Image (cartoon, rainbow, N blue to C red; front, side, top):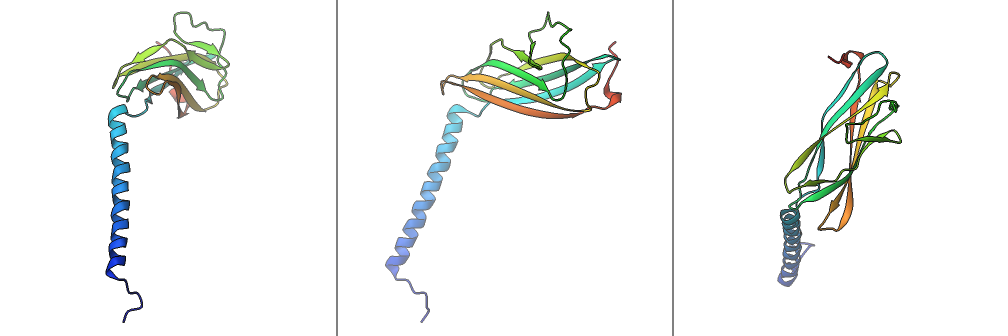
Length: 173
C-alpha cells in the first residue's frame, strides 16, 4: 500500500481548488486586457535626433523628440523640460523667436499642446552651450501632462546618453 493515499473526496477538493485558482487567474488577466482596451497605455517620449553643432567658442545642442499619446482619449501636455547633464548653457544668446526659455540650466516649454488619441507631436529644443562641455552627455526630458480620466497631472521622464566626439561638431553652413 502506498504511503501517500488520498480518497476520492480529497482529490475532488484538490481539483476544485486548482480550478478556482485557474479561473481567478483568467479573470485577472481578462480584467487587465479590458482595462488596456478601454484606456490605453501611458504616453511615451521618443528621442529622434540629438545633434551638436558649432565652431570655436559656442556650440549648439539640438534635441528633436516626439511624444506619442497611446491613451484612448486626449491628453494635454503642460510642461516640457530638457536638461543637458554637465553643460553650462550660454544665457547671452536670447531665444526670441523660439517657444523655449532657459530656467536653472534647463530648457522649458510651457505652451499647452493637446494630443488626440493615437496622435503624436514633434518638439525641437535647442540651446547654446559653452566650449568646455564634457564629452559625455545625458539628455533628460521631463513631460507633465493632464490625464482627464484620472483627473490628475502625470509625469514622464526619459534619459538619453550621448557620446560626443570632436569630429561630430560640424560648422554651420
